[in-house]
Length: 255
Image (cartoon, rainbow, N blue to C red; front, side, top):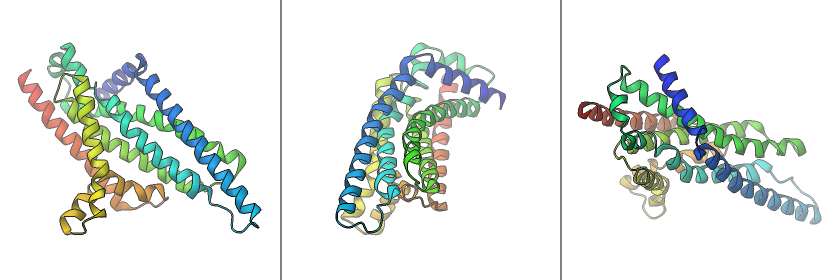
């Protein structure tokens, strides 16, 4: 565990001593801030129109504002995650420090977990900006906080899943651009797999749709905590880290 913490601190420090973390935080803050403003403005207009028509049941802020914002946050993460993971192993290979890392008295699993946890913490900092924006709603209203926590838990699981895949892809090349592009392509594919169910309801189509990360995030965005979705994301994280371990093992033999 000590080696994991050392690797974790090294990688997290490398994010924040370079422009990477601040650039990603700024990009997310600007884009999500625009989404937050637009969603809130639309909600206020709909509330005003409803009052002008004679009132009725109040418009649910969780359904009209928070759920779309959580979905938008996951979409933004789809573009930022490749930028987080592309350097983790590709930069080591490009700079030549991979040989030193592979021959050090540190187990492969400790290296992988340290790098993955550092990437996950950076991703957590990024979605923390979304939490700050949504927390403003509590100053002027009374949103239901439990679905919000479930939604952010889903964001964290989805991010951990895609980060594990991104780390695996980063072990396969020394070019960060290629690693980032390939990670985005794979993540995008996992994102759109559920489109198959729109035109085909056969068994194979249902299996492919089940592999979509969107299919399993949708219940979280509604505030529904389902064990099968948690198991799916945890299984994908394990699978991505397992593939990374096999790839790093091959690098160790070559080193």
